[in-house]
Image (tube, rainbow, N blue to C red):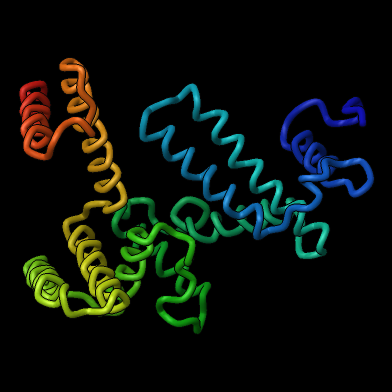
Length: 268
């Protein structure tokens, strides 16, 4: 197949490439056999790679990652068009109409002097109107990272008054849940213990929400800190011709504290 007939650039070129890849007669066998379900994991992966590039301020990579994510949208739209569900143009129209409807302070007659918090509340109210008679927690995507979904569920419930009024009550609940795990860890079945741990995570997410901390971002930062400090442990062990398997907990814990002190000194 030749690309001479494709548009020279822009979104139309990408749409033409996607259609060619899915052409039953001349397309790519792998692309042809894909479905919404098989492509969805790649969509999630590309979204995470965009977030990762932003987290690392890797602006040179971000352009490519955004292109990969855009391709995922085009891929799903192509499969939808083949099945007679909708077209890419309809996707664009739908999101354009939605953005106009949700920004009456920009495209309508409402005042632009609202605070960011008020605009957020208005945005959520508009989304609720669009959901109509749906239940409060309907529409919170199941595929979201669990901590992020927990916060979204809690925010939805809070908007109808189901929320602790202060952080102190959340902390009390956190202590209660942690105590339940400690007291029952030797008597619970694995299924019951999993449920208790889940409850503990859910309250941790709620605490983060009350403190206006993104739990996903907080945990990512903790993961990075752990990775960074453990790498220092390995470096120092290597200087003595050792690896972690040649060491023991006491030695590695001492080196961990050394790495921790080193970071604090660097920040000072």
